[in-house]
Amino acid sequence: MQEIERELLRDKAAYSTMICGLSGCRWLIARDKGRKAAIMVYSSLKIPLAACYGDLELAKRALKALQYPAVRVHTLEPISLSAVESHKLIRMKLEKQPAEPRAQIARRAGEKDIPLLDRFYRRYGVESWDPSQAKEGVYYMIAVSGAVVSAAGTHCMSTQHSVAVVGNVLTAPEYRGRGYARAVLSQLLAEL
Image (cartoon, rainbow, N blue to C red; front, side, top):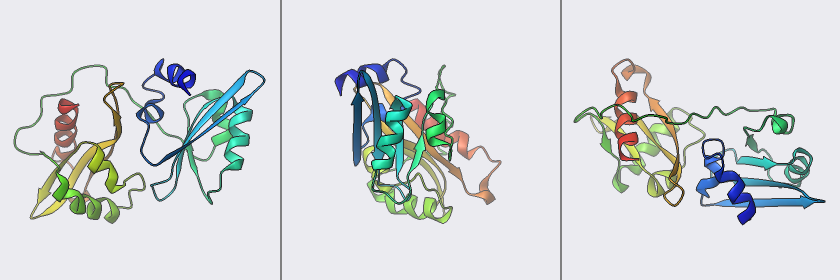
């Protein structure tokens, strides 16, 4: 596993989800005649997520061995695309300092805000949300009359490797165009 971790660390942006070592993950490691593949399965979401690294054929065999009715698989390696054709995930990397946080608009979500965030994300059918992300990571939100109208946070993070996967950026349709997404993101990125 350490060998695979070293390889993943060579491209933190590409393999950030795997590097974070999400809680609730199951790792499948396959080796055959010098070839290797690693698949990390995170099953806490509505549709389990599998992130792949390594040899295409070994990854295909390992995926077939999974006991899940449906698994969404994400990869950045072009060679692995045919094994995971059903969904694509676009990853971005922060190359410069984020914009200055917008004062007094967004605030860091605390433990008591998790039910509000949960209601907000479920209302809009966000599949990549799980309440454990707010407990273990960092979330910023804007609330109006006690209801969340915009939020963003970390799917996972690793302080050991200085990596975070930012996501679940959402503003309620009726509040869009007011700079709320920029506000929650700038606060979040300033903290990270």
